[in-house]
Amino acid sequence: MKLRLMGTQAECARLAFLLRFGPPDLEVIQVSPPYPNRGDRHQVRLYLEVRFPEGLPPVDRTFYSLTTPDGRSLLVDAWGAEVQA
Image (cartoon, rainbow, N blue to C red; front, side, top):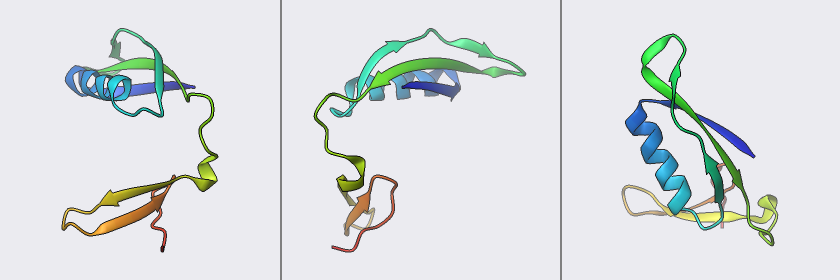
């Protein structure tokens, strides 16, 4: 899968770092250098090539347990929709 990031150089660098070293369900294969973004000299764009490791469960059966800012438990599906447990 190929992803395109657009933002300031600091924003893109931070997200590329988080994607590369954060989620265990995501393998970052390649990160391009930042390119100047056309029409906006304050932003850059960069491209990432990523893949999911073999053996992950199907996304329609994947749920994520989160905690809201007020400390309440929240269960969501892969699209971020709340799931009633």
